[in-house]
Image (cartoon, rainbow, N blue to C red; front, side):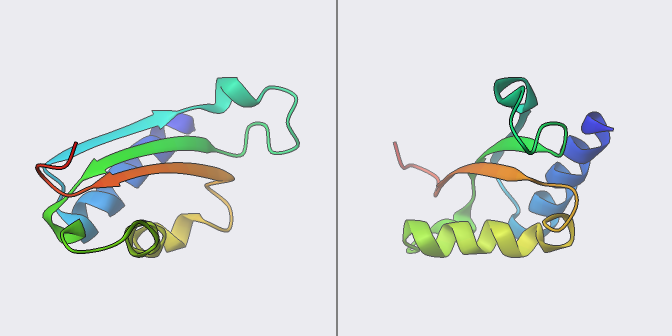
Length: 88
């Protein structure tokens, strides 16, 4: 099930933000014993021209908007690293 979630996250982010780099990592193993265990803990590292000129809050909102369909059930926790091309 987690592989399907990772692929769905990748698809939604690709469709919405056309990233030049995208890594989606299942971090569920870091949350063993946590109340949300097994419900989807992920890290998204994304570099997209869509983030140019946007502040971190705006970038995170863009990611959350792209993943809106998964937020109620598929994603329990999401760490986001969002950059525009050329940013360190």
